[in-house]
Length: 275
Image (cartoon, rainbow, N blue to C red; front, side, top):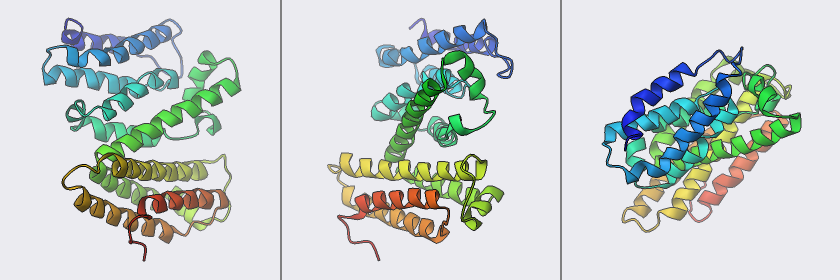
C-alpha cells in the first residue's frame, strides 16, 4: 500500500531520470532500467492493495510513460505487463479509458523493423545494451512479437474500437505521400521509409485479424455471441474488400497482403460471407 500511495513521488523520480536520447547519460540510464523493472513488477500487487481507482490509474499511466521510452530495452520491460493486463478480465475496466487508445497507437507505431532503419534513436541505446548486431536483431524480433500480442489482444477485447481505429489509420496512411508512392510503385527500396512504413500497416492488419480470431475462439459462450459474430464478420468482409481495392503492386507487400487474406479466410471459412 505504501508504494502505491507514493505514485506521485515515483512519477517525479522518473521525470528526474530523463535525459536527451541523443546524449545518453551513462549514470542515469542504468538507474532508469532498474526503476522501470521495479515499477513493472508492481503489477502483481495491484489487486492485493486497497488503493482506489485513481491511484491505480496513476500507476498505469506511469507504466505507460515508461513504455514510450526511446530505449527498446526500457520499453520492452513493460510489454509483458500489458499483455497480462489485457488477458485479465478484472484489469480491463482500468484500461478502457485513455490507456487502451494510447497503448494501441503506440504499439502500431512501434511495430517496425528498427534494425533496418538508419539513424533510428533506438540504435543509440543498442550500442550500449547489445554486444553485437545479431543480438540486437534477435531482441528486436522478440520486441515485435510482444507488440503484435498487444495489438492482437486489444483487437480482441475492444474489437469495435480497434476496427474503427484501424480504418482511420489505413485511410490516413494511404492518403499520405508515402502511401500514394506505395500504391503507384511496382518496386520499392526495402530499406526506405515508404516500404517499411507500408509493411508496418499490413502487420497491424494481421494483428487485428488475429485478434478477431481470438475473439471467435474465446467468447462462444456468451448469450449475444452469434449476433456479435455476424457484426464482426461484416466488418472483416468490408476490410478485406478495402484492402483488395488498394491493388498493391510491390511484390513483397503483395505477398504480405496475400498472407493476410489467408487469415481472413481462417475467420470467414465457417461462415457464408464471401461474395
